[in-house]
Image (cartoon, rainbow, N blue to C red; front, side):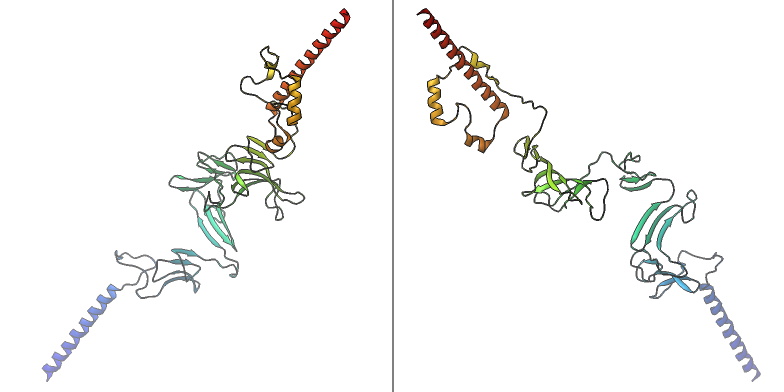
Length: 352
């Protein structure tokens, strides 16, 4: 009996020792993370959850950040992030409003609220700022733009010399039409000031690309307060013609209105370009009798366009001046011939 009790006690001791060993081993495998650091971490160690719940981070008994369990989405100020990094600010948080802010600083910039690079959202406005006296650069594959410390914007240059400075590139404004599908209307606008009532300034330049507006560059007066706007103050058409008051110039310069000038110089081409040939001995001057018959039949001088032709085609100033001079020179020949006949009659009368 004594032997049996001794065996039973020994068995209980062995079972207790085995259970203690297993418990200690299990505890060793599930050591809690220490706030002062962990020297036994492995490549498989992590802080987080092993079930389908997000990992929450909080202070003062309030959740500040959340990492979702089903997506690598981290929310700051929100427990329902919708992107890889979602920063959500509260405009009405107490004790003070908390706007949405993303800020980067380094030892060179300092680390206060007025240092570094900041993306700041307050209400519906978003502000991107380089807070140091340094350039703000935006590049893609080596190309981009810079905003320098003076507020000048340079494209493809680090040293812009004007508010907008483009180097080795073009500025394109397009307009929707059958010739430029998918684009939108746009003008370069000028004015001394702009307001809600006059948002277009005083003058504009736009590219027109329709049958009604014409095809070319239109310089137009905007419909600002106190002025009547109008189009085609100057129109440069696609074929190189220039129109004033018209978007369909048919010549190098077409003016729909009155032209006032101190002097107009017309260059003539061809040979001969001026009717000095009228005074040549070989010139065949029409007799006055034939001239009278021509005028009776046609109601205009020979070589001079009729009223109907002028109304339909207009007048070529250079050509018309040459024709008028030709008629003046012919008239001079008629007068000289008549004077000759008068002198001959006088001579014959004196001899009698």
